[in-house]
Image 1 (spheres, rainbow, N blue to C red):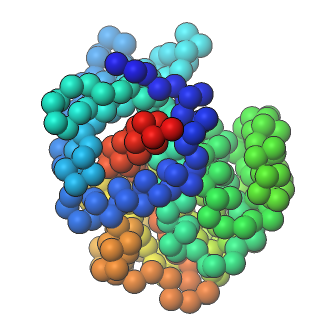
Image 2 (cartoon, helix red, strand yellow):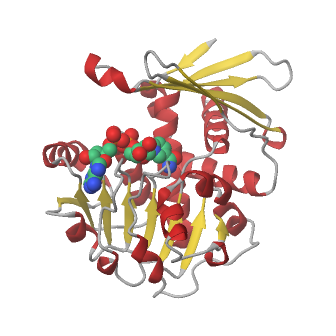
Length: 321
Ligand SMILES: NC(=O)c1ccc[n+]([C@@H]2O[C@H](COP(=O)([O-])OP(=O)(O)OC[C@H]3O[C@@H](n4cnc5c(N)ncnc54)[C@H](O)[C@@H]3O)[C@@H](O)[C@H]2O)c1
């Protein structure tokens, strides 16, 4: 079985390609065209390692795949990555294994692309300033997705680790220059978000990372980091100012993310305030932005549909080279 590495994928597959794939994934998901059972999870009490297995299939896109993701938090002490992931594509005619793709890179790409799809659909047509909070493993793809869908002149970057934020800016400046955009290190998360049209939070924080009052009217926010009830990047007070709320999957977000579960518990919002899944918007079933003044919030926790369609679209492009 051929294994495609990140390096190989980068030679022929772009963020634009992935945004198109994830756009399809969200449409198929909302149209009920993707089978994705709940992921299985085994935790090893000795090592604290977790093995996650995520199968998915989509008949009309001729795609079947399993993502295997192992999270071993103690690897930090061994100086090894804490996450190891692969996506295995399966031939839908024969069940044979077709290709293995670097699951870490697929995750970064498809997570960035979710933000790209959301901003393409929900942001004001003209956006100039971006903000990126968090400069870890997912951040590069988030930045590239923002730059791909809107012509930004400046992105203000902040993370709790100042040195790592600086190193991230140094590394990503070449990419930003290609988009005629300048990357600026912000002194605080509030300084980063205060004038921003587009905001991405992609941190592992358990407490809100900026003040709700700092968000300007017309901003669009993609909240990527919180995937557990005890994780919260978004201040609950923001929901008193937000006009519209969308999800990758409302069911998945409400099962997992403190960004929504905390303000629901605090009775600041209820399910009647939710606009729906981005796939429903793409299918024309619900409305999107209707004024330049609206503050719009998109929450993504990531769904296997994104991995499936991304992996298959990479495979298709690889075959057609
Ligand atoms: N939505 C999805 O589909 C999806 C996919 C992959 C990962 N994630 C989640 O996104 C988050 C980020 O992932 P990653 O791989 O980049 O993690 P990472 O550990 O590599 O980086 C985390 C970043 O958050 C910053 N940070 C932490 N607390 C902060 C705070 N209070 N203020 C500002 N910055 C803060 C750190 O300095 C670092 O830059 C994780 O919680 C991860 O589980 C979500």
